[in-house]
Amino acid sequence: MGQYPQRIICLTEESVETLFLLGKSELIVGVSHYVERPVEAKSLPKVSHFISGQINKIIDLKPDLILGFSDIQKDLARDLIGRGQNVFVTNQRSFEDIFNYILMLARLVGAEEKGKDLVASYKLKLEQFKLKAMRRATRPKVYFEEWDEPKISAIQWVNELILAVGGEPLFGEHQGVTASERFVSDEEVISRNPDIIFGCWCGKKVKLEQFYQREGWDKISAIKNKKVIELPPEVFLQPGPALFEAGLDQMSEALDLI
Image (cartoon, rainbow, N blue to C red):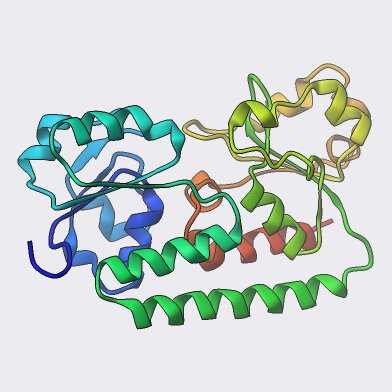
């Protein structure tokens, strides 16, 4: 192996998009089946799902670095480490964590200056949206649903995104690392009465009509006013560049409709 990794496998999406934006896409030799961004990455060899991977295929690709995300991938990481692989797994949950991740990955591949420029551009864009948010007459209450059964509310970076574009996260106090810490009930959602609902289910298509059929939800303002919107998980459920490349714009445009 040279000074920097030459053959990288990305077990989740954010590392793929980051490497493309850093001008290091040629280093990627394998990706997740869920990869969507950028479109060129979809033609790369598929080696994993989120919690499982094709270990032999990964090893056959001779990576010198494997990138993963979150405690949910701990078993896959353990198995790869057990087969002698170099695995780097991060657990970013906030905007600040994401910025630090981009900078770390940039240093790992010898693109430190590009990483700094990328983070600086995202911080500038974030401030521009926060200024726009200050001009909103009201802050709509936003319920972001990551999963339907059990109901899982927004992860921390999504709550930060909602705040940045002028919304009020319905469950902003739920900042736990694990999904179980973000479970919510029908009664809680109904009593907090969101103005807009975003469905963004991890790994399956949102059934918008299902929201209107839930018992008791007809009392909710978002349901009465038909403000239930599907958002793409490849943008909002990966802790990486997509949040700033597309997420800020999409979330802001949705709130403009209220």
